[in-house]
Length: 601
Image (cartoon, rainbow, N blue to C red; front, side, top):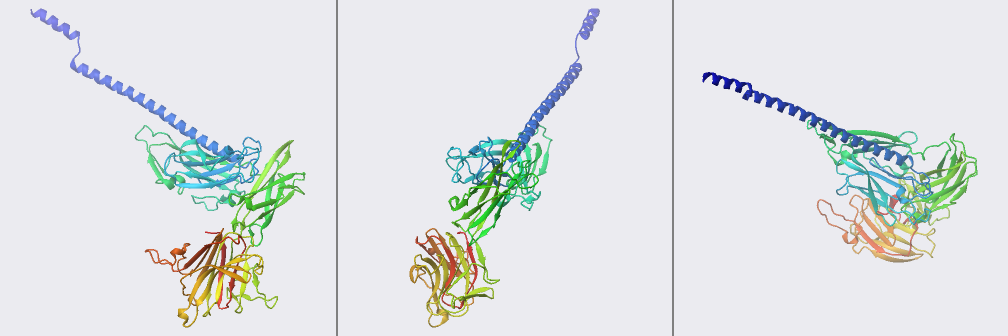
């Protein structure tokens, strides 16, 4: 029995595992599985990361290429309008004839900007392109309208969008050109490689004059990965360029697990630099054009690569365009022939507004290796009907004074940096453009002594060339001493709007409640004419300007806003549509200063 028992025990030991052996084996197996799982996970994360980085880099390259190509073609083969419509540190708009058919279509208006996909509008900018609205194969002078581009710029990431204007309305469509743009900074340079604008601060928007000076553009794009890095220990931190679009809407810095990469590119618009076949340059004289002038001569010079005049007999096509008053511009001739490399045209404006900056363009085709190559240029020309006469250096040219008695002398004089009449009696003095239509004019007035009953001073509005022309009248906004008897402290005045025709006058409106006018104090008389609307105001210059609404003058204090003690009268009257401004008075105890004519508010 004992022998048999030992035999069974011996066979059990040789055929099994102990508990310790099983535990050790399980531990080794678990460790191996964990190692294999870690390797698989690591390889998966690496593969996923490489895909994300590859997509990010491709996205950045695509965005840079798209921007660069668009800029290189700017201005190619366009006949109307500017080649650059708008530009800032984060958006740009240009025009070019991509299919070279001689006509710009709506899809050849390039408008590029970063924006969030959703959210409320935070910024807008305007463009006024010319293109073939009616598909008749030409771009007419009236084929333009204004488009207001809306952007959503809350915080990165943004998308890069291409906006395309519609043909039938001011609506537009928006197409995504690139995703996950963390930041975009665009810089512009002129022909001397000087920055536009000269201040390197951001944000900025280029003016019309600066748009025409663009010769080189630099792009700096920061793209972000679509997803965060799978490694939770990976941290990417940094700051955006101060003032850039990412810093405006967001916190200005980042600290997260997204990957980012910067891409830079430089693009020179090929149609803005001298090509092997030459270029066309434009020069207006004068520029700006001030009243009473209404025209300027624009000369186009076609030169070769060396800067010498092109001697070929070429025709130059001129065009003038403006989104505000397109029918008020005239350019003649529209087609000129080169003479010693130059052709000229005359640009005129009817002064529908006291200020306008249209674009003048010129184009021709030069022969290069047997092929006709179009050359084009455009520049802004400013009609500035605004003027200021502070009389500090005497009387500026352009004033016509009435009456002139004795003949050849003047009833007015500019002295002590102010303007006044030499003696009592009806005196008028006019200045400005006879063709001006809508404007506002203001003048500072002081009285140096007490007025008599019926004394007045005022502003002449929309006057004809000669105030003696009874066939056409004009308006006067004037202040009259309506109660000037007894104690000067009790003298009272009224504000009037008057229609004058020769010796006849009709009071269109007047201030019903007379008001005081204090000796030695500086007052402002202001009048505006916009269409049929006439408004006149009078107030102490040290106080707030009164409202345009007569019902709100005078207006008591509404804390924290102080009272408005001035007076306003207004009337609708359609008799006279344009004309000069001027001063009028029948007393020599007033002084006039700081006459200013500006566009209507």
